[in-house]
Length: 75
Image (cartoon, rainbow, N blue to C red):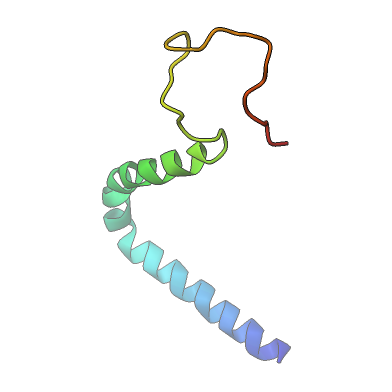
């Protein structure tokens, strides 16, 4: 079992090495486009961390502060 996994790993590493060596210029030519395609995915991923958009901007259309909290904060 261990020998089979080792053989598959070595063959896979050799295959990746040969593919990268032969097709390096093709991959590097597409790299700028791949980075541009990655931008929307990163944008969507980062918006999950701060609660999304609520439609208001800082300093615009905000209700006066009355000291009463109108929503719950999640911890």
